[in-house]
Length: 299
Length: 282
Image 1: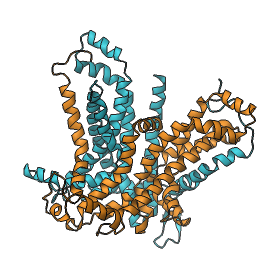
Image 2: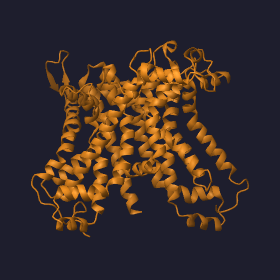
Image 3: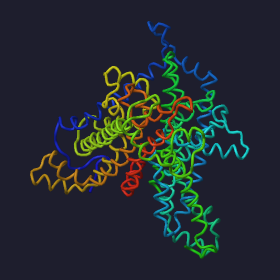
Image 4: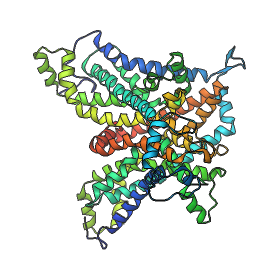
């Protein structure tokens, strides 16, 4: 069986019109709702409109310069990266621990597995609602516990606590996803490798760090990228239901800022520049992911 | 097990139980809260055991709606979410499978350019193009419509890629055989490719349905009418800015109802779900 350019069959149908008709629906959606808006954002990001929207001037990178000079935007960049790092780290470590445990031959294994994967299906705004209820300073059940322990819990006023709340809820939701991929990664490690190490006298902890962990590294790397993408984009619903970016913008990420600034209207060029920067970040992350996928194929 | 453990499997059991508790606790609390009355919860006197208000809270939530800012019954929101999720899932699968069919089984100018155009949309999630897309949807008069909710999300690089990869593994003999039988592209697609793709389509459907049901940012932007709310945007509007005005049992019942369909799918179709998840992420 040979394939030409790895992309197509040797035997194909002959038709001039039909293939275009078949790709037309997807192509129409892609051009109208993906490329057209993306191109508009790029063009808009180089323009400045006067206060009445009557004339526009081409200003090169002025919008970007203004944006990056704005302390609020710079803070949002730093905040987004810190959030991503903490969400990925806490969620990945919790999930790895659970996956290593669930990989052991336990009779209740399938039960634990099912109980651990289903939160994947819960939407971010619902996750936000669940946690904001438990940690609501006046009526939340966990907030009472914190108060009882003498902790001054008030995320409505304290920005650091609000940020902690978002990170906690976002990491909690992502445990299921990470658990699933870690478990699949662990199950793909041949048991002969681990047995050989055991015969050589390596204790379980040593076996984990010298054999299992390195063999898991493709999975870990893949999950780091996925978790960063998740923290950048999918936390929007969590933030919007829990803190709406507050208090005093302490939980405003880049995506949340695009949304908020856009709602206020006004600076079209600046808003477009924000979108373009996000596009560049997604392109970067996707490129990293694909480089990794290629390496995985070579394994 | 490679060696005998001193405490048997005690440690894994303990850790996994803690994990399950952490994962399940918020949902249990949501359920318990949905069965108690508003005043008890507002006073911070919530019990950890289910209360007596299960039936009336859920009846009110589903058919009447909260007395907060949104008055639409949740049944209406769930219907909107369902329509949107089905349109997104079915739409993505349908337009992707026919594009993949064209790209694999035909030779035509710009074939590869079209493939790349579809592929690159992977890097244009709705979050990076929200306002320009909003403007186009507004110009097309699609605000507050099911088409507006689903069309801008319906292109799928992953699904197209998945079907393309799958078609590449379908033996050429099948095409030759069906040609000898005098079948054209339509019959080959319908009688050979579609039946072979059934499992892939099902796995993809499970993932895409959950994805569609859980959409939030897009519906939030383009729906303004109360009767076009999805359950995800509706739940946020039930939380009043002042604690005392929020009907928490209704909010929590809505949260439970919002997670019911996707969680049911994950648990009931676990195999398909895992397969879909792993395949779409490749």
